[in-house]
Amino acid sequence: MVSTVRDNLVAAGVRLLEGGGVSALSARSVATEAGTSTMALYTHFGGMTGLLDAVAVDVFARFTEALTEVAPTDDPVADFLMMGLAYHRFALANPQRYQLIFGAAAPASISRFRADITETGSATNRAEWAASFGALHGAVHRMMAAGRIRRDDELAVAGRLWSINHGAVMLEMAGFFGHEGHGLVHILGPLIIDTLVGMGDDRDAATLSMQTVVARLG
Image (cartoon, rainbow, N blue to C red; front, top):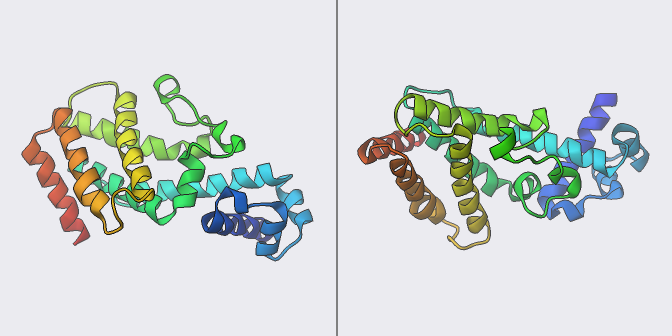
C-alpha cells in the first residue's frame, strides 16, 4: 500500500505537469489529483522538492526507455538515427516532460543536478538520470568504431549531436516548422545527414542508413 500511494502521487504529478507545466504542481493539486491528502505527499516525499525529484526520475526513465527500445543492428548510423527519431518523438509527444528535464526554465531543484559534459563526462551528476546521455555516447562510440565518422572526443561529439536535436525540437515546439512533420523531414533529417557527412561519413552510406530507418518504420 505504501508504494501504491507513492506511485499514485508521482503519476498524478506527471499528469499535472503534462497538462499545465511545472506551475500546475502544488502539494494540494497533486494530492487532489492522486485522490489522497497533502499529508501523504509530505510523508512520502518530504514536500514538493522531493516530489519533483521523483517526477524527474520517472521522466528520465521513460525518456531513456524510448531511446533504447530498439535493439542495435550492424548499422550504427541507422541505429543512431533511430535514436534521434525516438528523441524527437518523445519531446514532441511530451513537451512539458521534456522541458522539465532539458528546458532552460526548469526548477532549481532539477537544474542543480545538471553537469558540464565537457568536464564530467555526463550530463548529470545523478546516476539514475545519466543513462539517457550514456545511450547517446554509446551510439557515437559505435559510429566511430565502425569507421563511419572520424575519431574525435566522443563526449564532445555526443554533445554536438545532442545540440542539433535539442535545437530543432525546441524550434518545432515553438511552431516554427509547422505541425505536419516538416521539422523532421525538411530540417532535422537533412541537417543530421549533413553533419554526419561533415564528420567523415560517406553521403551515400549516410543516406542508405536513413533509408534503412524509413524502411524499419514502414
